[in-house]
Image (tube, one colour):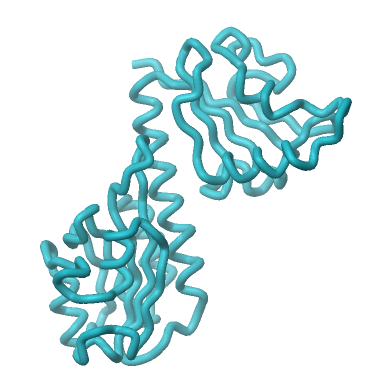
Length: 239
């Protein structure tokens, strides 16, 4: 999480934005303030500040913490007068069980964002979530399959990911996997020679170890006959 926030800090240099990471209750755990923060950003960026809806009203991080959804709140949409020059966007971060683990927020004071802040926050939250969940999956010895229609997105936070235990049972999949698999199931023609989603999601440990159809453990496969451009299989780290 710290690495991802530092990357975004460099990207946001000179924009006047503050990046906040809170826990699932809305308490600030980490903040990266601009070089010259406003008095309001100085206060709200302190570690331990309660950004929750009960404390500050309808702010983006408060709503995201309460409802576990991505949202934005701009200027006069804030309840308190002191916040009506503030613009903020936030997105939830989920753990392996799909529960809210934290919230990522981007806030600016005195002017609107000069870029697509909502997309940046959502993508960064997904990247943090991917690193968090991947670490938890590896610690449990689970296999992971990543797939996406476009090669350049295969190993990014936008890739669809499914994890299996050693008996081949699905233990986790992200929202991109659920969405992509539903779309492929709906569009697949009867009798198609493409690999079905059911087959992909029912592979077991033995299949993953040899994986002749998908290209092998740790490999990437591209070519005709696949319903997706690329599939990558990650073997669990053995301690």
